[in-house]
Image: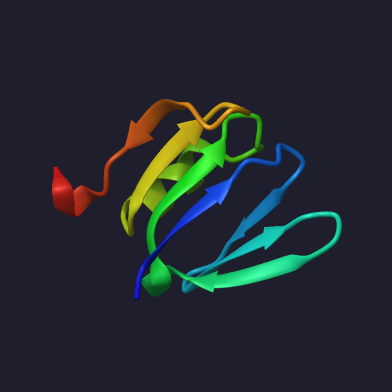
Length: 81
């Protein structure tokens, strides 16, 4: 079952691998396989390159949000365009 992932904390670090996404906070580290992600909501203040955004957009929809959860921008998955 695919899930929606929301990352609101601006101090979160994201590492991108070929098969999974590593989400690191001060207190924990989560590893999520791409096949389990339906869409990803990321705080606009999280440091992520445009190349990595496009890599993620190949696999699922990517949204940028502010600290209140309001959607500011979206990058649709290539399959949906």
